[in-house]
Image (cartoon, rainbow over all chains, first blue to last red; front, side, top):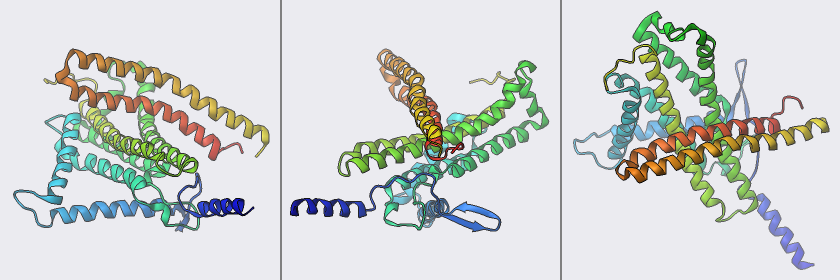
Length: 256
Length: 81
């Protein structure tokens, strides 16, 4: 008798631990003006922005010719982002797009990893829970729409109204598909990121629910890996789209 | 929620994620096999091949993820409930 009650106590204690809970579709709503926003996403987004700003400021406060420590690390990050952009857009025109693609990459990367590494679950909200900002569809749709806007802007700035020629360039028969593409690009960008991050967090949460110790670790590591890859994929695709609208379908005479 | 809708949604979610795994699984296997062939033929190009392969795998993976998104919508945000 005593034994079973001990077991019961133990399981109660276990339930009280804020380790594992599965909540999808529950949000902390804030009323701002006429808008109802998901508060937990804003909190974590601000956290991510704060981390990025503070690290950047600290790294650039005392710039030295021979970098060391944080400055070295941030220069590595910058180089990585620059190479990524250069690979996608090409040597000649990549420079103005480094800030945009770098911001996308860093924000998504830090968001994804903050969801996995920062113990958000220890802070409890009245409703909903804190997690990576990218596991909310609103964040990813906003990022994807920014990307759409930017590649239209890139095309207009480079080629003016001639940009619209790409819709009818090989043959006008493909016009509907070309128009459809402009809608599927942000759709697939946002769903890919959102689905991957949510899937990671759900898999980890389910495993932690089943076996709280040790066993979820490999899956968490896999999650970290996938998160990084997804940030890379988002930035790479943004670069590829910008390159496509800079180049157009027509002029393939570029010498490699 | 109407029990019929609930049952149909759960079944559709399970079938949807299962079926949407088939295509990407075949595609990823094919891509990985071809990448291994490429590395065997040209071991010095391994770094480049690995990078491209990971990116391509992520694209194929996203097809399954679309299925997963549909399944999650059916389970947690069902529009017909």
